[in-house]
Length: 444
Image 1 (cartoon, rainbow, N blue to C red):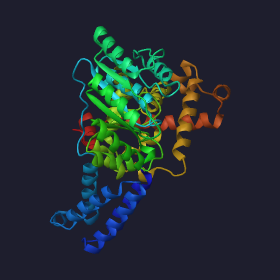
Image 2: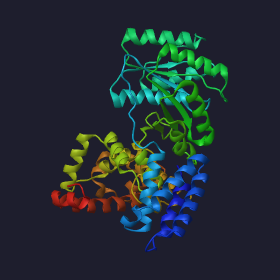
Image 3: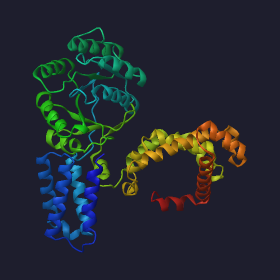
Image 4: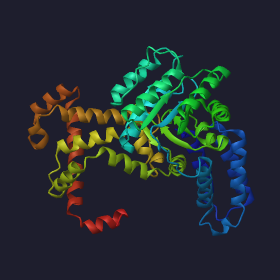
């Protein structure tokens, strides 16, 4: 996401890097580039104007004198103002109440139904609460069938409303069921339209009166840019939304919605959809997103993702094997599996500081992702004995593995070379003094 904006902002700091001090000419040049970058990312014109003016005021003030260098000073100010633009601080969604109702609203095609299921799964797994999914989109064909399927896939109880035509009747039934069966959160999927109309808003207002929702989340499609912002403003004026659920941040979105909606509507972005899987949902952190936009990475989210996918007992066993230099191909396969669970390789790499500058262009990360899959296929085609003792892999065995995995003997040899390099590194790490290693990594 926001790759063009990242590149333009990187150029701004690069041009300032060789300067000894910051002049008004430098500030004007930098701000012109920043303005062009933001408008190119489809950020609201008024928001761009206010953003640039705030950066100018700070750049020509006393903070210049305390700056280490012009490039660092501008980067710091832009980062802080981006955080402010994105909502200043992380806001936790409130699920107090029994049941706490979450109303998902937005235009048709924004992803309300899919993200209702994501929301319910997140509430179950991250909050430890018992959610109930309610399909109440009676205007879109198969919407309710879709949510029933998604609910079953996520393991979330879902009210079967296929024989009901009145959203208000559905709301009353869902509330009764939640209270009788003790569900703690009710995630309510509502109807949408291609354009906002009075009939839809009247229906949503009646549902709001019945449900008395704790959260009204406007689902905004990041791919639609300023259309999403205009729609969010209209919904907010009618329904008083509590927050925004921004979808498709993993796509080729220019990012205008992400950078505009919070300031325009005055409500925080609470969640972000970052992929097609039901697990691809994140709490929105303005500071982390600003870091990604400026190519600073997002180490905290990367660590959280790693903690989610890594089995603690397996991690301890792997550490013990590393210390004894017994890291084998079964361990490598486990690590490849963990990497896949963290999401697309490109997303993972973008979270590493400075990695955006090293990432190849033209879809090369997709090629690398395919190579990882082929490596995994090679290992899967080996016997347990071959995975534990790769040294026994001779010519006939390699040909059999290549045939079984749809690869080549050359790829098997490349995998074994890479594995050998990893083992050498693991051996060095295993012999290192833990206290010294922590100091080198900056964690002790």
